[in-house]
Every structure is written in C-alpha cells, then in structure tokens.
Length: 80
Image 1 (tube, rainbow, N blue to C red):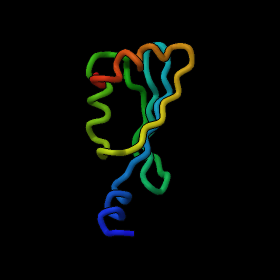
Image 2: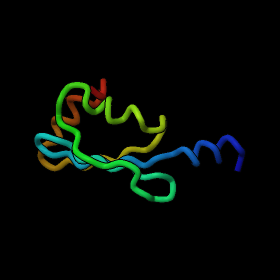
Image 3: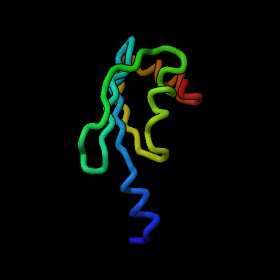
Image 4: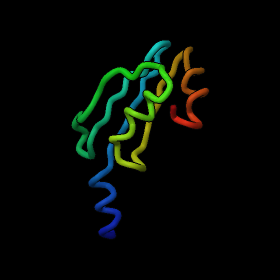
C-alpha cells in the first residue's frame, strides 16, 4: 500500500448519524473502532457543519433516518 494511502487511512474517522425529528445523534469512531465523539446535534442552522468541522475530511458517513429524513434531505446540500 502506498504511503499516502496509509497516512489517509490512519487519519480516517467513521461517522454515523441516527436522525430523529428534532435532533440527530452522531457517533464518530477512529480507524480502530474506538468512539472518539458522540452526542446530539440539534436541527438548527449551522449545527451539523459545526459538529463536522473537527472531523477528518473524506471520512465516510452513514445515515439512518426513519420517517423524519426530510430534515437531512433539506440540509444536505449546504450541511447547515
């Protein structure tokens, strides 16, 4: 594996969102699966962008939304 790919993977985080009506619960894990951050993100303008600002760029995101996914769809383009 090339060195740059090793470095990118070493900095990778895995982000999971569980979307609810008034908030999204987020969990961020490091490359070893250890939870490094977790908590509620209120559905307010700019809250998602602020919470993701400390995550490594290019980290994969998984979203679960049942019934109330309209908030995520409406905010996805600008992450705000």
